[in-house]
Length: 405
Image 1 (cartoon, helix red, strand yellow):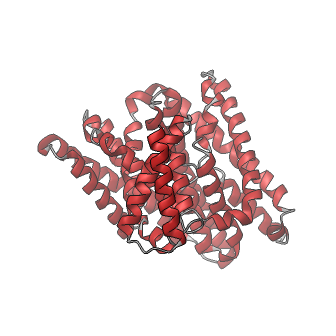
Image 2: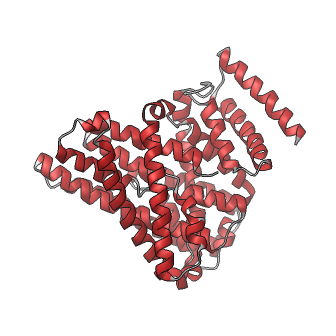
Image 3: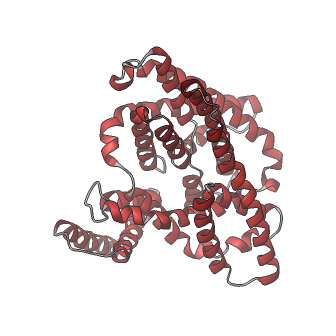
């Protein structure tokens, strides 16, 4: 451990000097430094029983454009495609964990938990948001009707979660037990419902405001969701044929598949996360090749998680957090309390083990992909709600930092 401390300190000094002196470096050198120092800090965090992914995020934040600026805005943006590829690979693992065999007896419980958590969170967060925002400067000045709309938007935002962090921590802690698997299933199901529901809500808003049907928005979102599942199904079946008849070079095939899905998602305007989850789900549930498909991911899993979370950290906008941290933290606290009691009620109703509400609430803190998607829809559809977008981004930053621990 002393060697790791010394190595980390030496590398940190070198990077700090390079940043202070504005020593030029290319993207590959920057990426190399980031990966090595992230690995070292992750090991140090692990020694103190903290999640490694928190160390990776912290390195990205410190090296990023809003701290040392070792990774400037241009470099951070250029790393986003690598971030998309790593996200796709992690999503394969998420899909594999959604095993019908393992959850067959818990399907009713998963649906019950999901329904109760969605209902309670949406109702109470909408209500609390309305009360809170009446006294918040930039929203308190809005007409009553718009304050109701803003409260409803934040009700939707409170529902969004991040299955990627859940599966990363399951891998790190080897916690492949019932409770983490239930959390993962509920998270994925809830995100799909939220996307569809928010698309309907926004189409109604646009119809009232602009006198249009808003159909392009809802059809665009439905294509993004169900088109992603359809394409994921096709790719999953083709992957099965490869695994059964060609075999060999599974790691290379996995990387090529992740790159292909990332490019295809941008071209067809589909969600690479949902496509990759579908591929993992198909391979796990329609064959006995799930373990074979992802065996080699174990070899590079640490590298994948370092890349994903450190790049994510470098792209987190801390300036937004400075302006909105108070209201964001208040929303996070309220949402966490509501989630805990919703899980408790569902657990009592189903006469389920208390573990799901005693510890499961912590798995619903992180907000990432779906929250960002909702924020972008708001930004594109209603530019005047720019402050809502800022709070959404602030929630992503704060929960990414606080969620894993």
